Amino acid sequence: MGYLPLATSAYNLGQIAGENAAGGNAKYDPIVKNISVRIFDKYFTSVGLSSAEASQNGYEIEEAFAKARNLVTVMPNSDFVLGKVIADKVSERILGASFIGGKEVSGYADLLSALIKLKAPASTLSKINYNYTPPLSPFIHLLTIIGKNFNK
Ligand SMILES: Cc1cc2nc3c(=O)[nH]c(=O)nc-3n(C[C@H](O)[C@H](O)[C@H](O)COP(=O)(O)OP(=O)(O)OC[C@H]3O[C@@H](n4cnc5c(N)ncnc54)[C@H](O)[C@@H]3O)c2cc1C
Image 1 (spheres, rainbow, N blue to C red):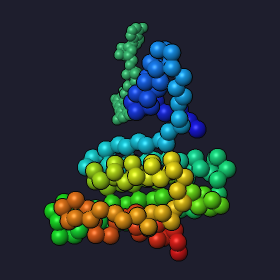
Image 2: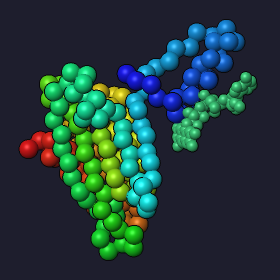
Image 3: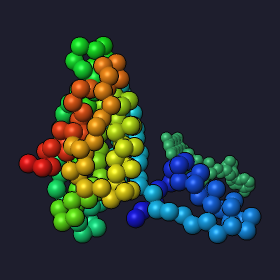
């Protein structure tokens, strides 16, 4: 639904152009926007539509927020990560999300990118069995909490 001048889309478009130049008939499958930036020692990711973009495209949206640990509290480097997920009020489909925290936000955005592509409802977030092991992940995942906040 928009112009996305990023390396990921350039790579995919280049492959399609090459295949078609060699006689193929490849088509470009729409992609979900998935961007991130570093802000001092934090990382911000935005995936899919923002609240403003969703409203501009005629969606009536619902939003759920949460703040959680990226690792269990006792682990070194445990810190907070904040997230917001937006969904279409009618179909309950996830439309977009944003996260701010440590490097884990890239993985959260990739998971949301897949769920948006698969047109999953927001309730899916609380039904996923997230990986948990103290050095890598939290006991209760931010996305579980956000999924439950949608069901309230
Ligand atoms: C500072 C910066 C940070 C970025 N960070 C990210 C990021 O984190 N993630 C992300 O996904 N994207 C990022 N991007 C965007 C990404 O780099 C571009 O979207 C991507 O490189 C575009 O690829 P391209 O092949 O279309 O063009 P380019 O990579 O610009 O390649 C075009 C090539 O064509 C050559 N060329 C131009 N004119 C001619 C000519 N007449 N004859 C022969 N050769 C020519 C150029 O020299 C160049 O090598 C960033 C861009 C910048 C500038």
